[in-house]
Image 1 (cartoon, rainbow, N blue to C red):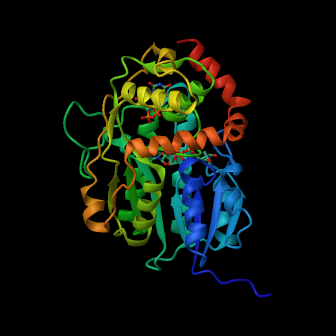
Image 2 (cartoon, rainbow, N blue to C red):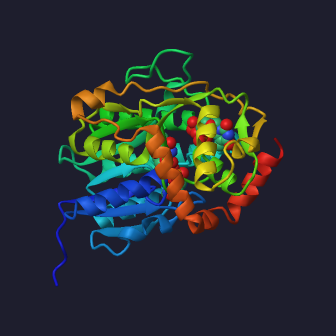
Length: 355
Ligand code: NAD
Ligand code: TYD
């Protein structure tokens, strides 16, 4: 049998993580003419169990590799004839960046440069090859009570995580200007949904409520985040990859600002109902703990550009999205048990027992 010829051979990095696994699954299923190569180091945050749906698909291949290793990356570009990159691999948790910033520089900055250098080396100019960097709204810093981040907002990263993502965004733009690499960048607000590792606010709270453990709310719980259903982010990535303009940046957000404490109460109420607990009983688990150092107060995205230029809009309202998310975690307790064993447990205990 002759080998199938694919119209694109897309390297998706970080495809075993939360957002990356949703991107991989959508692309494998929707685009049988593309070969999707999922490159992931499988850190604590990467889990091949997120990809059961597609692991046997003919247009899917997994490659275990570290983006910090440039020789490995160059060999993959050469051997696999990579035509495009959608880059999501990163260290992604702000709290971990505060305890170990160097790891964030290595993966998020050096790893991104290694991919950019490989793209520059293996893609002759103007052949339609595209390098897409998936980034965060946290590069813009922190807002007061009013205002929104737009694509032209000056960068003002304030955590080691956001500093490393800002740096990698700058390198992507530098490669676009200096070497004419075709690039697009998106800066997205906080995602939630199935398969999110339970160190981030929403899955951590769901997991702790299920197990009757304390709910650690940082500071007064008044910090605001703009929440987006992960599937809406994936649709935006799909559109930007295919239709975004070369060299452009797109902000992506859910039009859904919430104070942390209100979100935690919402999750408590949903779980009280679903677990047949007395209303108000899970909220008794809320503990106000020492604030995160340098904690950004408010993020809010103005997503007018992607709405106008690419006809994207978020589909899930927060109440609907939180119900669906809670249902998924309740139905997938084995997944939770699996990812919260081992390394997670020791990090969690060290991080939270001191608070
Ligand atoms: P995640 O932590 O769930 O997954 C990251 C993945 O990258 C994991 O599978 C991990 O194994 C892999 N990885 C880490 N270091 C690697 C290395 N050196 N080499 C190869 N693979 C490596 O992250 P996520 O929440 O899915 O975020 C994905 C991307 O989206 C990140 O770049 C993040 O900055 C960005 N982002 C996330 C959010 C969010 O709310 N989660 C919002 C906006 C942007
Ligand atoms: P997080 O999910 O870590 O995302 P980010 O810091 O990238 O926005 O945190 C979301 C918000 O929730 C943030 O304001 C910090 C807060 N938070 C808590 O109050 N308690 C927690 O246990 C965690 C993980 C986060």
